[in-house]
Image (cartoon, helix red, strand yellow):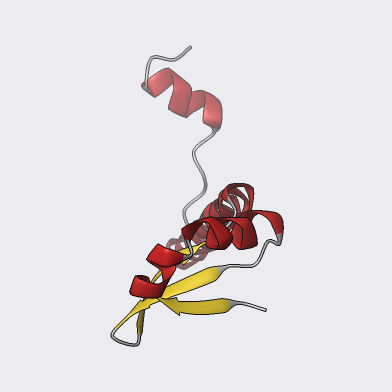
Length: 89
C-alpha cells in the first residue's frame, strides 16, 4: 500500500518515511499543492527498476532495428567487420 504525503508533512516524518520505503518496501509519494513531485523508494528496488527500464529500452531498440532491416532489406554487419573498422582487432 503506497503512502502519499505533502512535502511539508514529510519533513516532520522523514525517519519514518525512510523506514517505510526501505524496510517495508513501500514507496512514499510526496506532493506539493496536491500534485505528486517525487517518490521515495528503497535504493535496491530503485536500481532494479532502472535495470528493468534499460532492458526494456534495449528490447525496443532491437525491435526497431529488426524492423528497419526488414523494411530496407539490409543485412546486419558482422561483429568482426565492425571491430576491424573501429580498429578494435
